[in-house]
Image 1 (cartoon, one colour):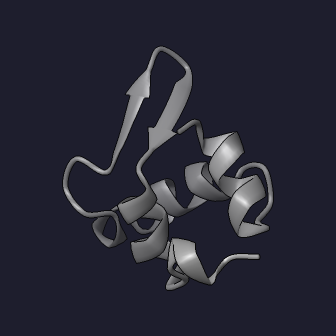
Image 2 (cartoon, rainbow, N blue to C red):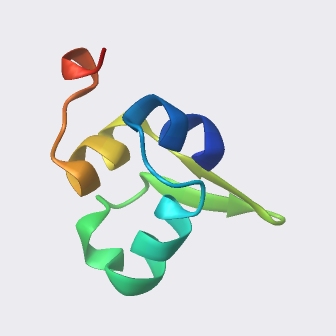
Length: 59
């Protein structure tokens, strides 16, 4: 999913994924985030690893 979609689902700021990737790239499991042009794409597993909140725990 796009990073903006992911941040809305997890209730984070729009630039959360970009900032976390810049500051803590080791928190993302390998292959869980990639860049297509200027678009960041992140997997559910990547968001779960960075936020500590599982997808099924979201409202």
